[in-house]
Length: 298
Image (cartoon, rainbow, N blue to C red; front, top):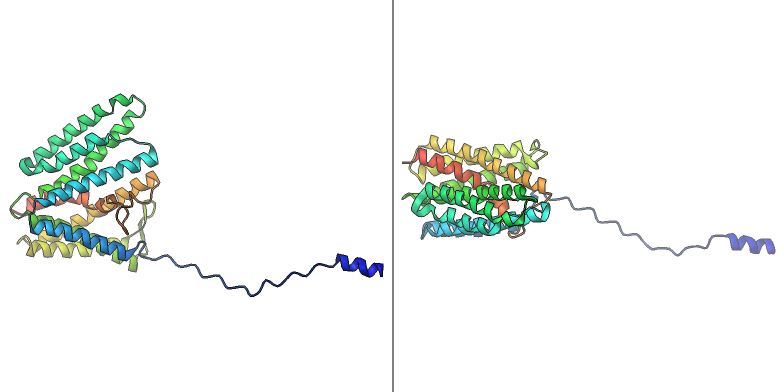
């Protein structure tokens, strides 16, 4: 009996049944779109409607839209640099000088913009002096880069507005960039297989670039023919150039964000990120658009 009792004590205590185990839900595959597509489309339509309304009514209201965009983009850029790298831009003279670059295009054109840029650079160098030598070159270099990257490039969009057909020129520029972005996005999502620059922007593919090129060239030929009453072959060259600069702008900002270790420059626009994340392809394209439109269109 003692042996039986000892065996009972050593026997494992039966555990209660845990009941039926529910199968784990399969992990959702990430959307190939890579973003909240309905929100992105909605925001894009609202922004496009605001720009179109300004150009078709009082076209100089578009200068105000550019000024607001440059100010918001500059603030986003300054905040991202400070959070990620401790870089402090001379924000006040940068914002004031940025508005001067945009608004002085109206009476003085390119000369007004370049003089405003030079004065802004000097003001930013002076503004940073009281902060001492520690990080002076880093901060001032980043500030001058921001002044050139944002309001200086943005001012070329403002200069396109000055001729009598300025609204048509701006629309040609915007349609070209939007066509490039949309064509590249659609082709990349549907057919993207071969990375274009995997170390910079893993989602950008050569198939997407091909889609951008087709869409940009078609948009250029159509807008030159119907909006500007110019030659279609000029529109083809214009569209190809815009695709190149829009792609370059996108890659440059992707590299900046990768260097800073951030996904987006901000969170202002649902489905897009920050305003800077939508300006990346527009800023360099504005410069090239102004140059080509000035050469092709009388």
